[in-house]
Length: 132
Image (cartoon, rainbow, N blue to C red; front, side, top):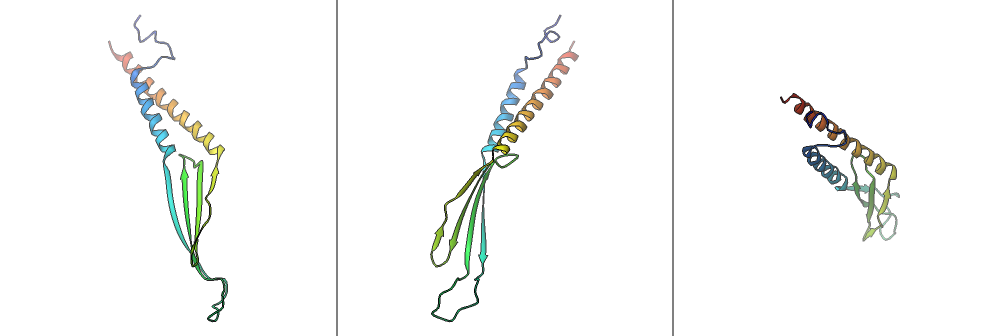
């Protein structure tokens, strides 16, 4: 009997291992990248214009900086707000972690790795079976 016909189902080719390594690296890279976004919101004054010398709530700009991380679902989100009146007020960032998204990202990563391994092994074993 040839080696290909007696190959155990748990053994796999070196090419499969290399493809799995690159696929896992790509998935880790996608999950570790951070996407940053900055929004500028003009907030109008809440009171009508006041006569000179009186103080009121003036119009101001609200700057919202957000950072998200994760693929295909965002599991990390940090939002920081800066409000500019006459001087800048910087509020501390609000950080949220979503454990459900982390679990779903892990499951999807394992499914992608399993699909790559199954397809690669199927193609390689089919090619080996056709060789004389």
